[in-house]
Length: 219
Ligand code: 5GP
Ligand code: ZN
Image 1 (tube, rainbow, N blue to C red):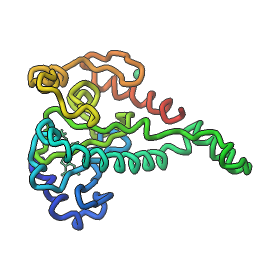
Image 2 (tube, rainbow, N blue to C red):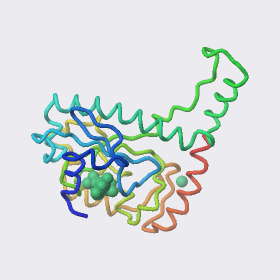
Image 3 (tube, rainbow, N blue to C red):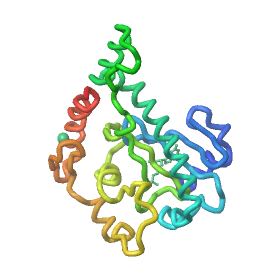
């Protein structure tokens, strides 16, 4: 993978009708080509003044941060809708609401459906591998056949993943430190859902995540 590959989506979004989900004046929203969860999108700013900056630096610009937060919120809604589309028929809350609707229960008396937005996370990697600034919009499950290394999992499930809401980072924020972040990538594996430890047994964690996925989608 070439570090600069994401520029293509910024400069020629029309060439990728199957990957580009949304194009605004400020951003391009694309599907991650190697998704690490059921729904995994990348939000790229189009501004040449920002798109090569490290996230820690870029989000020190307050106006830019506000824009990216607004665009990310819209992207997260889209991701939640996609998750609902994929999980809806499995979710107990979702089904209960659908069934009530079918029975003709008035709108304001319907049980609340599942809030899929709760399962969408928005943030950046502390040390991105791709050169162009991107915000990950990713569902919580971490179910993926593209996640093949401990670091793939840990990059989303330790402080290596920096929520967009946490920016700007304080000058002394430990998440800026390379040593701390290398340690996070090399950490023992822990299930995001039940907290069970898996050491460095990635294959075992993956089998466990399959079981967690079944329960999580049925919530
Ligand atoms: P980073 O570690 O830099 O925060 O994440 C970069 C992300 O870009 C990864 O999740 C990776 O799967 C994704 N990616 C790498 N190359 C491409 C590409 O050419 N197209 C798309 N759509 N995603 C890519
Ligand atoms: Zn678990």
